[in-house]
Length: 117
Image 1 (cartoon, rainbow, N blue to C red):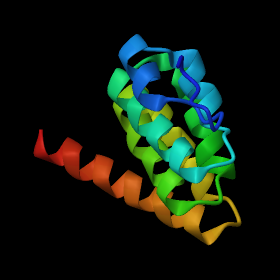
Image 2 (cartoon, rainbow, N blue to C red):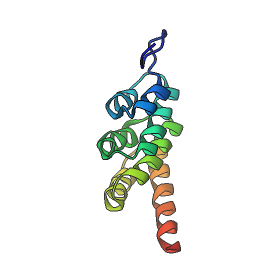
Image 3 (cartoon, helix red, strand yellow):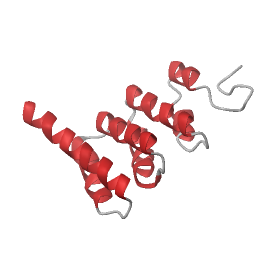
């Protein structure tokens, strides 16, 4: 069947097994938010830094809160801490309340983790 099913939706599980980072990055732009959400989660698990820029784009532009939050969580796993924090600080300056709220939550979560160390 390949990485696309009959419905032409990306097969995220197959991409995960193949570690198809480029395919997963493309899936971040899919019309189905569930596909975007799962792609962000898998990219975070894989941990490839090629996903950093696409995660930042998702954080800035995504309309679906769950997808955006998955991208934030994945960015924290993949990006160097200062890169992730800078993107959250920039997002706090935006006009979309949900983006600002999710970014604030991520900053606070990161700060708590650093304090525990």
